[in-house]
View (cartoon, rainbow, N blue to C red):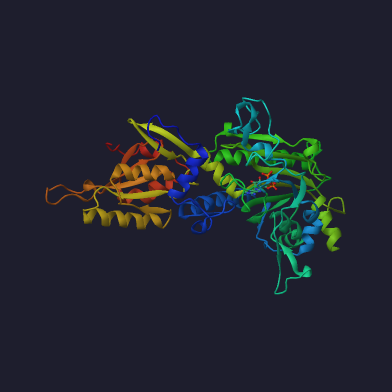
Length: 501
Ligand code: ATP
């Protein structure tokens, strides 16, 4: 927390620091100096990311009768990437600085702040915000944004796929790739899934898994990394079908866009931080009929969180042609084979983690003190309940707290903490987004020396309102079933007496 009057660091810096300090996300290989292009999820980060993936899988696969799952391998036959177009076209335009040798994506070079030695101020050095001209000489960036001195080369195409070798011999014939997207594993398994599951159009196949891209300029924490996870759906539609007079693929595309936007808000993202961006005609991939991105207002500005494309029949046709295997669906009604069209909602698990963290992060003033709180949705919060003893010197209080933790841990991620005074413990749980704290105090266990009877109740404190209620220990499993299910705090709290703060 900055001192009063001190300038507060940018939100992204605060998040990176919170994530490291509280065990969400660490820089990969940090003891060797780290790398800015891949990150490791710590004890709380892995829970948060798993919760996001679990919610996505439940809502998009388990709860839908028209969806099934898949887990394809990362290393696939190299012919897949030729047919998909990745070997020839999965490139970004790259420019190099002739002085400092740094590399940049030509199309993103004006999206970073730039260094400028201003001739109007005797060559003084300035850091100028992305895309803006110098305030003194009005010049716009032409040189390297990093060193401010070198000329940039003309753009050349750089393939983003990681190449490796399969088997013991490193020769051209054994070259293979780490998948740059999970989607192709779905397309090449289209017929396996269709036949084994006896599916009827429209249906979708979903997959969550790692993808690898040798990004030219990774950065902005987990926003753009070289190893990341995708949550992808390929939703196959009969191109001859219509719904209310419109082509079914177009209607389904609209529905997926609405579903996916609603999904983010269902888990607490503020609608004002989400928007839809339609791809312009000249931006569309040649095979795409329409693409819309769900963008989130990240601290770096509005950026893609998920892309939702109508890829037509391009992928299935490409793989059918290259493999010689038919990838069609038999339309019983029309007695004809058709190549389905596909709608592809493609989300990043790591970008979702970042967006949910950004959205949940608040600095609040409570009784003259600042608190940092992650207002994460209860389903996403890494820890659901923290059990805290009010006095750690009292063995009976501590052992009751351990008993309660052990009971609740059967159903929910529950932690025990006695490493500070209660106020500090609450702040720590607020900072990692724990929705409920249970405090065991003297009244819970009683005090025989003072002749005070045990009331067998504990205090439950709710993170956002900081309200507290006294609940019998025996009620806790039921109460948390409600609170961590669909019953509101207000409804549950109405059945119990408040606890004084
Ligand atoms: P961008 O324009 O940001 O490079 P993209 O359009 O190439 O993204 P897609 O190929 O549509 O991305 O991938 C789908 C999703 O996968 C993205 O919306 C994003 O959430 C995630 N994603 C893509 N590349 C990365 C990356 N390098 N690091 C983290 N997530 C990524």
